[in-house]
Image 1: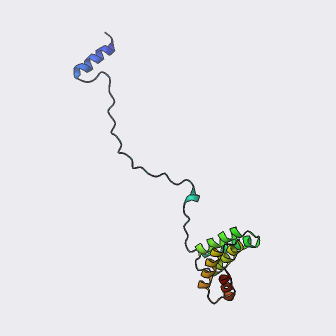
Image 2: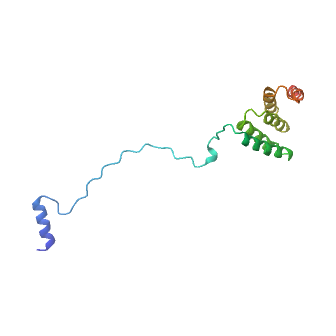
Length: 135
């Protein structure tokens, strides 16, 4: 007899299997279904906190766009400035002017009203009130 047959007979006589069997692996607990992380950062809502330096940067960029005749870009920059610093009255005044140039009377009226609310004794308050009444 060959040696493997003898080994198999001895193992079977001892009560064990001739060839070792794999032990069943314990099952891992089911994972909770998680949402994948957002891959496109531009889809996340932007969070604003009080940042006067960023507001000033947005104002300067908005002024540049306004003087170049790009009123939509200017309005967006002035709007960003109001989000970074909600107390910046000049941003609301310039936002109103940019919206007025785009013929959006409702948005211009809202921006001018906010400007007058924040700076009721401004030098140009009378002119702004006239503009609002004409809209």
